[in-house]
Image (cartoon, rainbow, N blue to C red):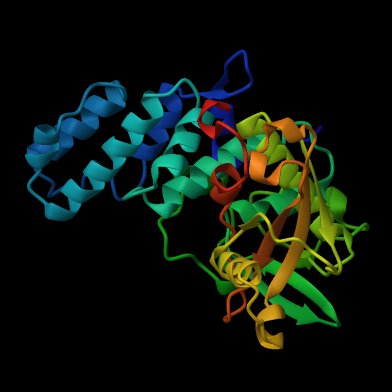
Length: 335
């Protein structure tokens, strides 16, 4: 088994007996190495002292008054965000538990960058031991925006930041340490080059064929199945569909904002024009292994998952919807 996604920092974390990821000091210190948190030479003494104290012990209590004493307004905001996020991680036994509570109660002011990083490392844990590169590449949709394009009749998804050049977001220190290139050649993952994914996994430079009826959507279904099993402890089967007939939309989960909008329209029986239907990337049928776990009103019924592209051809998947949107009884007790 070849390692993958080194940039997520999974090697800095420990595992607890149940398989979840335990926060370590080394993992927390990576956030302190972010460019926006390293005090510049002109930073005030309070900011420099706070940064130094946290580098020595990233778990020390930080009060609102400690942050309020920082002179620079932008720096104060950055520290407020970081301390709140750190405290969220430290309140829980595992990163998985911290993420699950965060998305159930509302992400609030937590930056999407931090959420995506959590998804990245939790997925690395959930997919540990997977030897199918297509499943790993499909799982990248969970935490990285994709640009979709039709090429020779195939729907191809490529990493938006990679095809668009350098990202405007600050680069993770781990990525910088790995010396990854700012731009890279894009290859579509196929049977001939699948073995190269492992060495390239942190470059996000392999595109995925998401054409209906092909392996890419089946790989995404497997990634979602493992995500649900890992975070919720619920066994399901997920299958991609190539057509829909006589569907009972009793329960659906949009895997992105546009997918949710389409599900709302279908559920209310409204007509959907062809242009809107063409936005659908994937439609999946999810079935619970144990229907007794489901809410009574939909017990035994399939759940439909809808993934769509935006009008400007982007795929922005929201994996938290799989945590918060399934019809599970007593969801708050499932860990």
